[in-house]
Amino acid sequence: MNTHLSCRQWLNRLNAWLRWGMRALNSGQRSSLHLLVLLLIAVAMKGRGWVLPTYTLSISLDDSTKVAAVPSRTTTDSKQVTRGVRPSVSLLSPARSSSIPRMVMLEQLPALFQSPVPHTIVPTRLRRDVITYTVNAGDNLSIIADKFGLQPNTLIWANPELEETPDLLYIGQRLVILPVDGVYHTVTAGETLEAIAEKYKVGVKNIVNCPYNGFEFEPYQLAPGQTLIVPGGVKSFTPRRIRSVVGTVPDTAARGEGSFVWPVGGYISQGFWEYHRAIDIAGDHGDVVGAADAGYVVYAAWDSNGYGNLVVIDHGNGFVTYYAHLYGFTVDVGQSVHRGQQIGARGSTGRSTGPHLHFEIRYNGEPRNPISFLPGQ
Image 1 (cartoon, rainbow, N blue to C red):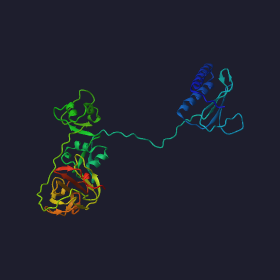
Image 2: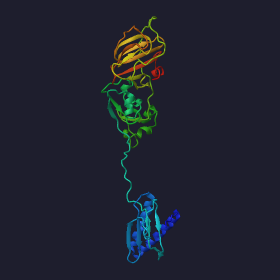
Image 3: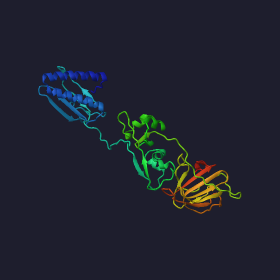
Image 4: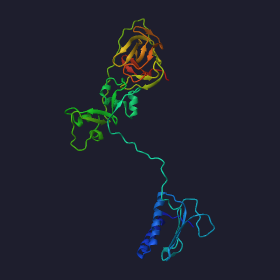
């Protein structure tokens, strides 16, 4: 019969086996010791949950010790053990002679192998080096930042030329890419770690613990021209100078109602954020661009600052809209336009990586998020 043993009973039984094993070893009964080893292995493997095909192990411990193992099967022979359905371990100990078990039967011995794992999970390792990236067609700062799991600000703070014109990338432009969010700092003469940490609002440990920076032992030395990654560092945001187009709007010019429509269809490839005070509406090259509201054209020409072909409409109520990177324009300065009237076509002129409309709304000279004024899509 099967006997389900408690933890204390298991320990008592194991202790008895150990004492028996020592007596067997002292008396030269090597086969008895082998049995003890098998039993200990079975107990240890049970805790691992391993599974082995059921065997009936019959061991006779007399002067001519014999060991026999045969697969269990259903039979009426009382000397055989029928394999149970449940994967449990059963120990049967018949009458003892000289404190040594005459027979031990083990059911559901643990396996000698574990289930195979069909695939290997390779842990993701953080990149530790600074790399460069070449701007491709269709890229913008948000798209590039997403590729590397960074914030767009990190790209700007690692590439000083972007701080003046962050939204005006061009194909082939080379950008420095940090391994973590933060600031890329070039040391100048006389700077200290404390001063750099304070400048970017972090602790000194943020800098010295960064593997890229190569600090190992104090005192930490700095050299002019040395580059440092400042993980978690931030720069104070300074709004960049916004180029304004000033024009005289005659009293007879069309006036806007302050209600805007989408100037072109497509999808937003880059939204409004502190270094990109506009939205980019990407789509097919040559798609018609219309006036977002009625107004007066105060600029329609090539812009050398990176906007390419640019149209600016003053709506006569404090609002002014900008339409940049146009393939071409169909209006002239001094012309009144109504809401939805074609003013040009979507293109990729100026500093641009692909066809999109760079669309700005300014109110009394201040950039506003166009999404707040446009109807829901």
